[in-house]
Image: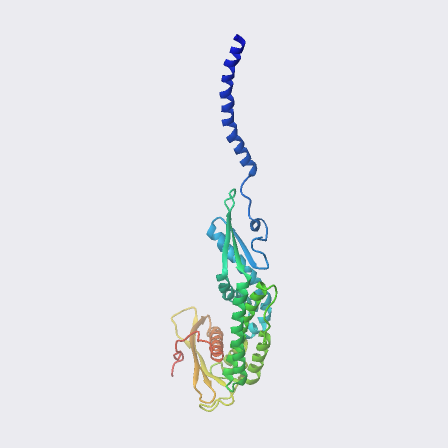
Length: 380
C-alpha cells in the first residue's frame, strides 16, 4: 500500500509538467513552420518578363521598379512608352529626305527632335489606355514594383480610327496641291501632306506594335511626296535677289547661300530693275546694305557701323509680303579689319533672317518674329 500510495502520489505531479510542455512547444513549432515557409513569393512579372494573367497576345506590359510606389508606377508607364519609341526610331530613316529639305544642317539632330515629338504625340494618347494592374513590395529590400498593361484590342481600334482620319487629310491636301494654279498653294499643300504623313507613319508604327507587325498600307509616302515638293521648288519657283549699296555682290551671295540652305532655289539679278518691276520672279528680294566708319572715343580700336533693309515683293501685285531690317557695330585695331568684321556680321544676320522669313512665307508658317521691321539704315 505504501508503494502504490507513493506511485499514486507521484502521477499527479507529472501531469502538470506534460501539460505545460504542450503549451510551450505548440507556438514554437508554429514559428518554425512560418520560418520554413519564407516571405510571400514575388509575382511572375517581377522575376521574369511575362505575366500569366496578361498574355502577350492580348496585352502589352511594362514593369517599373523604384523606392516608392508612385515612382515605380511612373517607370512602368515609361516602359510601355519605350516599346513604341523603338518603332518610331526605326522608321525615321524614311523621313530623312524631308528633314534635309526642311532644314539643311545636322539631320541626325533634327531627326531626333522629330522622333521625340512624334513619340510624345502618339504615346500620350495611347497611354490613356494604360493602367497599373498590379503592384508588389519586396519585404526584404523595400523595393516597389509596378505592372502597367495596355489592352491591344482597344489600342488597335484607337489607332486605326486615327490613321483613317489622317489618310483623309493627306488625300485632300495632295489633291488640292496638284490641282492648284497658285504656286504657293501647291507648295503649302504638299508640305502639309508630308507633315501629316509623318504623323501617320508614327501611328501606323504604333499599330504594328500592338497588332504583331500588321499596319495599314498608305497610298503615299514621305519620300515620294518630298521628291515631288523638291522637284517643284527647283523647277517652278523663281526667287530673285537684288542688292544695292556697299559690298552688294558679297551680300547677295550670302543671301543666296542662306536661301539654298533652306532648300529654296534662287537666281541673282545683277542689274537693277526699273522701279516696281519684278520681272519673271515669283518673289523678289530687294534691299540695300551699307558699311561706314564712325568716330568713337577709343585710343586703341576703330569702329564701323553696318545696316541692311530688305523687302520681299510678290509677283503681280508687287505687294510687300515680308521685310527684314538689321544693323550693328564692329570694332578692330584698323578700319579695314573692322569693316571685314562688319561685313561678316551683316552677311550672317541678314542671310539667316531673310531665309527664315522667306521660308515661313512660302510654307505658310506663322512668322517667328511678328514685330514689323522698321528701317535700319539712315535716310541720308
